[in-house]
Amino acid sequence: MEKIIDENKQGDSLVLNQNKDNQRKLYIESYGCQMNFSDSEIVASILAKEGFNTTQQMEEADLVLVNTCSIREKAEQTVRKRLEHFNAVKRINPKMKVGVLGCMAERLKSKFLEEEKIVDMVVGPDAYKDLPNLVAEVDEGRDAVNVILSKEETYGDVAPVRLNSNGVSAFVSITRGCDNMCTFCVVPFTRGRERSRDPQSIIEEINDLWERGFREVTLLGQNVDSYLWYGGGLKKDFDKASDMQKATAVNFAGLLDMAATAQPKMRFRFSTSNPQDMTLDVIEAMAKHDNICKYIHLPVQSGSDRILKAMNRLHTRQEYFELIDNIKRIIPDCAISQDMIAGFPTETEEDHQDTLSLMEYVKYDFGFMFAYSERPGTMAARKMDDDVPEDVKKRRLTEIINMQQKHSLYRTQQHIGKVEEVLIEGPSKKSDAHWMGRNTQNTVVVFPKENYKVGEFVNVRIDECTSATLIGEAVGYSDNN
Image (cartoon, rainbow, N blue to C red):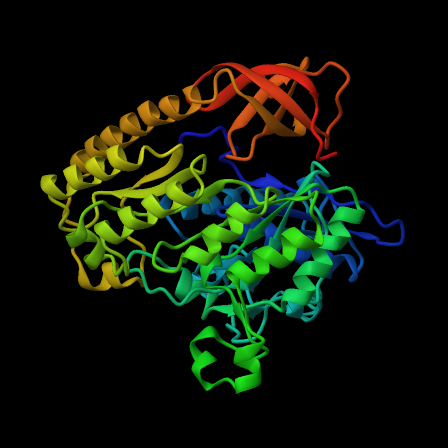
């Protein structure tokens, strides 16, 4: 994956406030999407009650867990290499147990245990509450596996432990699973059907984060726009709900309004959106509340109607343009980012040019760009030949990346001369004398530290930029503190 933003591409080991009564040590690495990192916080919370403190030193751990991603082949290869490393350490420290969590665990199931014998435990995304039983099985010398998918589990009753946190920003999961059967995607098979979390538990978690000093929350889901709570179960069963349930149902726009109203000085972001499900009321809720950030991650995947149909994306090029136009009409300064796949099966040069012309129309602020990677079990893998040559994929991906870099610079240049509110997240990676934060459009802003502190909202005058970063100088505190 190529990103026009500076992010850590490796798995992150996570740190937990220690409980002096806990005698065992847990080491977790997370790979992939933000949902995986959020899930690791749930896992750490569950295992903290079972006597585990987390550690940054993998060699001293009693239990090593890898929270995995199956979106791309490269991600799985990275996890396999880490498992080989863990097993080398395990030969020196036989008491150590190794487990695989998440999407890769769900996809490969018992293969890890039976064929490769490189782990002691395999746990799917809906089975984390079973970890105490699985750990007990492993302690008795037996392999343990639970990859059963659930139609109800949302972990809404588990208070996540904030791991490796800057104390400013936090993730709050609002949905699990996905009902969109995009032909390239494994998520419906690894995370199950879509279900939404009780809004009251979401607001309670947000209120608790505010009390603990957090100032920004990202609402997470595979497809947040299809959030729908009606006191029932799966979204697909909403038609069967009672009249009372339908009358009191909360959709995503309603949840955004509830959150922004409950904590008017807290910033809210959300990820990820699906073009077919984003409705005008969501955009209007963003416009209504200053504390809902003016940024939407809006994956399009391709600019070709023919390829979109082959991907089973339930929107057309024209519908996507209309959505972009509505966003820009209602929120003129809204930043938009993309996911794009180069070289999907049967993609022609004309299809690729359609993608480039779509990018030229939107001029995304930044993006996440991939060469197509066949994922076992998906409809594309079962029904389509991966027939675009690798050198063609790479060339098309390069052209997409080059165009995105041009547009990213164009977008950051629009900020020069403006004074923008920035939430300080921590020191700049390149200079201890500078703070790093983000503006409402999710663009990184760097400025001299002076006497400001992490977690404060500061007004920054933007003086210069790169394609990914705004550089400026603080001119005073924001009214939002």
